[in-house]
Amino acid sequence: MNRVKFYLIAVLLILMAGCNSAPVKDDQGLALRKSTPIQLFMGTCVVGRQSPSALEESAKKKGFVSAPKNIAENYLKGHSGQAWYLSNSEGNFGLALLKNKFCSVYIHQGDPSTIQASMEAWLPPKGSGFTYKKELVSQAGDLTTTSYTLFQGGNFLEQWVITINNAKPSNLVAVMSYQGV
Image (cartoon, rainbow, N blue to C red):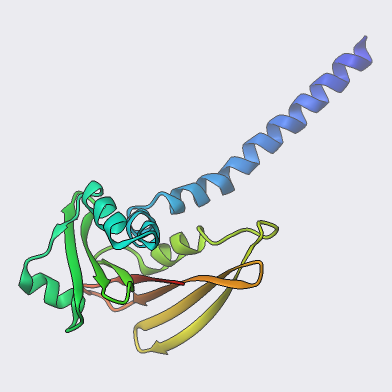
């Protein structure tokens, strides 16, 4: 009977130790995946791959409002498309959808490396049937652009691009962009 008690206590301790160590990593990944910038990107640009109307509907649900002309010009930079902006307790954000369905979320505050880590937390895990290729596109001064090309079964699925600005202070910290098939 003592042997059974010892075995049960040992198993219980091992399980408790495993449970205590795993959530720390999971909690960090979960916190990154739940951050406002990545939630706005996933909830607008990535959802918008269905259609521009799906993007617009999702943007409104997230609190974005149509940008007046002077603000829209900053996000569209002379291209045809639509622009929205959001100002809330988390900060200020912009959203642009170009006619070619290229979508970008503009993030005006936060830590650039944390914002990039939040995007990487959404990349597909090994064995999921999806793969990705990470590529440094450019690095000039305080600006770094990284591309993540996602594949399903070896076929191109979509591309996520992030440009981060490490200049301090800055009115624009990062831009997350999406291009699908």
